[in-house]
Amino acid sequence: MWGGRHQAIAEELQGMLGSSRFRVYTGDEIVGIELGGALKNIFAIPAGVSDGFGFGDNSKAGLVTRSLAGLLRLGVTMGGDARTFQGLSGAGDLIATCFSRHSRNRQLGEHLGKGR
Image (cartoon, rainbow, N blue to C red; front, side, top):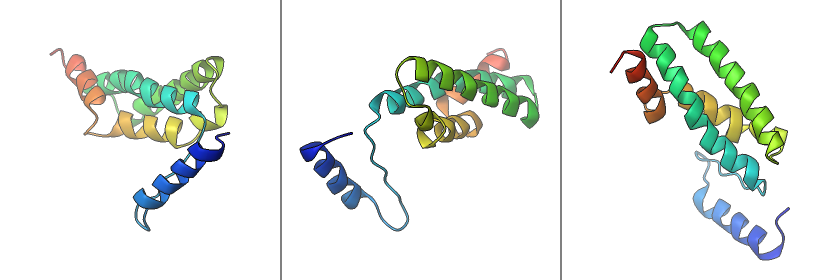
């Protein structure tokens, strides 16, 4: 857990950046947060390949579900907290990145799947 000065700074930033329309969370589980943010990009590429091949949503949902399982196993092995990967920094980011038309990594995979 963060203590003293770091916690105070995090709470101050949370108050400054957050609003009734934008919720800001603080956390001290750096390993899980960083791994979730990095690994979701890797898993978004095959999700895009699935789109490029023309597979449906059920196929991609299966792929994303297995990706989350892999992210959880690797993340915990590397010292992250399992709860982090089941929350916004794991499942949330993974789902958004694998399904969003705005995700550059998913777009890369889609191009690869189309043979470009």
